[in-house]
Image (cartoon, rainbow over all chains, first blue to last red):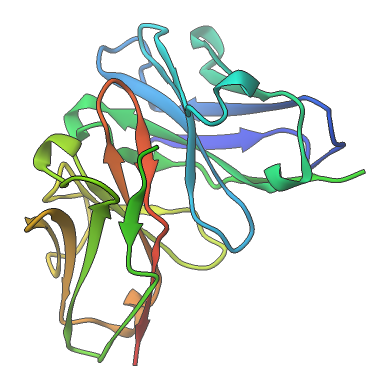
Length: 121
Length: 110
């Protein structure tokens, strides 16, 4: 059984850096063709892709947020970490991690439950 | 900047058929964009319905189908049920590791 769970602060202040962790099980992140991504959803709004890290440590970022994002993985801990700098109230959203694989044409086929992050002073 | 377009809202009668579309602000959607579709009900994480244009995810009923119609990706629901009332999102994998979500379609079944 594959599970993903996001964790991190529920409240951050403007200008602070957000660090979110996705802890997963049932996924072999050393297997070729696997990636883990982050997607967010502001309240009442659409989903937005943020970043993805591949099994080989290659990384991709949303062009609009690239300067603020860093994605890393710790295979020994089965974790993927997303950091976002200079948080702003518009970054208030539910943040999801999700698996993506080459066998599904890089669709996001397994999702975590999401974690709500509010940016407010 | 790539913009993926979806109908903001759609309605269908119970038992009816509805086709939601996913297009590009400029250009055509093709199988090479590996369109995928997700269903999301309020308070829940998205559920993957379709990947690689027309492949159903495990456990997804066969009344959900994906295709390319003209210059857009399409999600067709045949025999709509009340619990199909949800938000539906498409995603295009633009190659070189870039994913773009559409704005979502709110489907009402009434």
